[in-house]
Amino acid sequence: MSASQADPVPETKKSGSVLDERSKFMLGRVLTYGILVLAVVLIVFPMYWMISISLKLPREIYRTPSLWPQVFTLENYRILIADKGFLRPILNSLLVSTVVTVISVLISSFAAYSMVRFRYRFKGVIGRIILFAYLTPTSLLFIPLSILMARLQLGNSLHGLILVYLTFSLPLSTWLLQGYFRGVPRELEEQGMIDGLSRLGALLRIVLPLSAPGIAAVSIFTFTGAWNELLLALVLVTSETERTAPLALNYLITSDVLPWGPLMAGAVISSVPLMVLYFIAQHFMVQGLTAGSVKG
Image 1 (cartoon, rainbow, N blue to C red):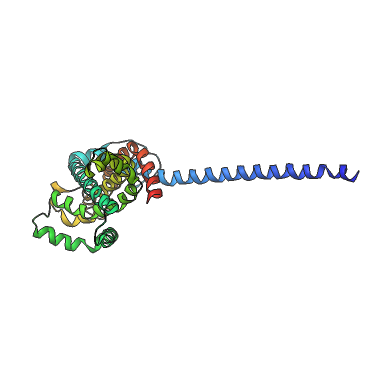
Image 2: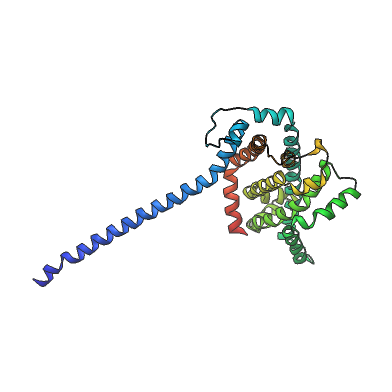
């Protein structure tokens, strides 16, 4: 009798524990989605505010701030493009960023491959120098670089700007690509060389294709860094025709009253190429970052 009377007690405890687990699960999901929604708002709202300001009249911007433009206007974009000639800096930034990305990825691929696959004296020292060059702040080098560019007669030119950007992008690209190349089995290259490939052929036909997600991620990081860079361009470029997009936006500020409309319109136009690039390459970005975290 005592055993039969005690049977319902474990069932009650079991049902209570199941309810507790379900409530904890639902609470965890609610907190997770709440945090995700908060993160999305924090990320998207500045972009929305930037676009909203770019579509407002000046009196709305300075007198009646609101989340939604009362009168939509493209006057800020007209001023920026027609009066300020902002398309020329966009093209300059596109040229500089593309050239820097192509040259940096090409050279750093060979450098990273040699660091991973070959054995030679002072390889460890060279690797530390590359890492040190990557970690060196730009603010410590812009004065020596400006003097060097002036003596080489490369100041105030896109060629000099590309050369200077390469000094910062090459160490980062080389350091990142080493992790991806280490993840490619050495046996695949050896098998390819047994079948008749040279060392260069093994790199071009085996290592680089297998490291394509990592190369895509490095390319995007390099392009973004060159596209957004301001300090070196501010020091090295003085001609209006050679300005990059961030530099042209900086020169829009000419008085105590900031031209928020054209500034936000310029920020929107400058963001479009990067948004398109990240949207196209987002799949490679995820694969590249994941591979780098595992292979490095």
